[in-house]
Amino acid sequence: MSKKPSFKLKDEFKSGFVPGMLLPILGFYIYYLLFFNYMSFDGFIDHVTKSNKAISVLSLGVILNLGLFYLFYIKEIDKAAKGVIGATFIYAFIVMYFKIIA
Image (cartoon, rainbow, N blue to C red; front, side, top):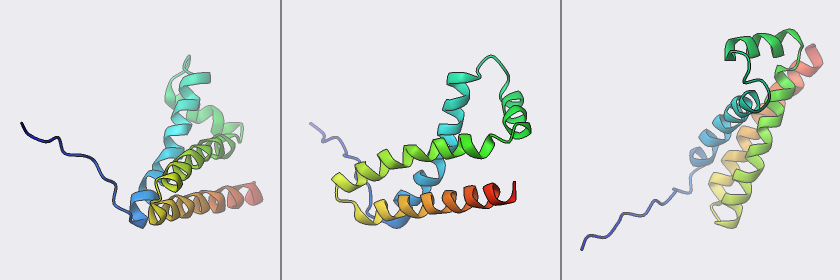
């Protein structure tokens, strides 16, 4: 009988950074599906942009990084957890930039 290959996440910075950058975008899309699915996605983008809410909605998506960080933390995948923190800091700087400009 053949043994099933197990998925093992490498403890690398990029193993946390890439999902940490993509998860808030997924959260943005989930927010659209939960609250604005009656309009097209393009209409939703237009709506949140015109109402200056795009950055706030994206900030909500960053909360998903908290769960990912916690998962990496309890699995003791420290470099990947640092990657999630790095991605979160990038989003924090983007949010601060647009909050100060707008």
